[in-house]
Amino acid sequence: MSHTSRSRIPIRCALLVAPLAIGVVACGSSSSDPLADKPYDAAEQISFSGGRDDRKADPDKPLEITAKGGGSRITDVTATDATGRYLRGELTADGKRWRSTAPLAAGAHYTLRVSTENGDGRPGRKTIGLNTAPADKRLRVRFGPESGTYGVGQPVTAELSAPVEDRGARATVERALRVSSQPTVEGSWHWVDGRTLHYRPRAYWPTKATITVRSHLDGIKLADGLHGGPTKPLTLRTGARIEARTDASTHQMTVTRDGKTIRTIPITTGKPGFDTRNGVKVILAKESFVRMRGTSIGIAEGSSESYDLPVHWATRVTWSGEYVHAAPWSVGSQGSANVSHGCTGMSTANAHWFFDTVRPGDLVTVVGSNGATMTPFDNGFGDWNLSWDKWRQGSALTAGRRDGSGPADSARLRPAI
Image (cartoon, rainbow, N blue to C red):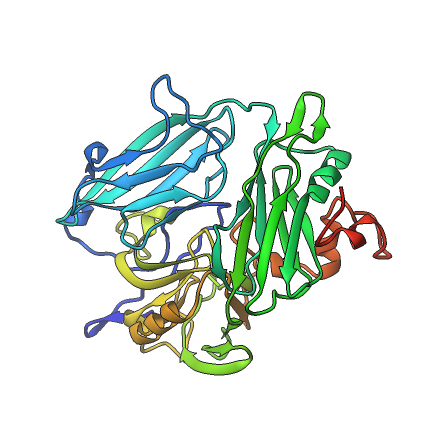
């Protein structure tokens, strides 16, 4: 990213390594306009679905925040519990609705920080406190993502309403969470932590596959006073195999569909000190407009690195704010130099094409960067950066086995209880 008009101003993409963050971060340059004014109280511009005062939110239901009024839009939402853990969420492209995409913790207090814009572009802010109801002693499971069509790299997720730490109880849970696919493939669950499991096949999903996920936990005893509860099943489908290979050393992205190259794009990636993460990333979301601010990653206003810019055709690959997006200011460096703070920048036309071509679950693989490898679980879907052997070590049915034999071999796709 490099210049605006005739003067050359460095404009970079920012990376913030913060697990499960949903705040908007990324690329820009400093600017002075009405948006820099002190934010107004946005209480009248938003409504949300959670409990207030003496009413407590149901942790089994998604939290939704909605912008009210024709000219108002939400630009950023950050939700954290009392321990500082971020709650994942997704903002619609028009900025009218934000919805949590992971379960709320039961018996917890959340702080929601909402940023808005009115019709004149002035920023608003509102901080909201939210309490959730205590657990009801029924272990519930929420499968993800939502039903729909995804790329072949999309993992299946299972979020539990309470932590399960006992190995025997984990094995019981895992056997009850059944994944089947047509065509059939070899796959396994992996325990990310006591409340989160991911499921992926040994290799990527086949194209045009149908994946069905069900829980048979209802009524099963997991511990004294804790039984499984009912769970809504999930059906996913896969589309074509879309892969984008980003080579930070040659400053080129090659996009393939089912193995055939469909476009080669000049790009810029992270400069030294802000190197783009290497490895396989799964597209998380597409946002046609994102307001990217340096302050959201701790860069002080007025510093040489500060920025505040509207960014278009932004395809998110990490929760901390790494995107593939339009960067018209850096066209002069695209194809020849890495000048960003970590995002992958390209021309507006190429970014629009990329945005229209890919879907969540498609693959973006970065090579040739001096950056670290994308972590597996704390900043998006880096699941494919684990070898199959290491992946299976995260299963309660295969952990500790090296010969590949054991109950999981007959339970990977249609485990018997």
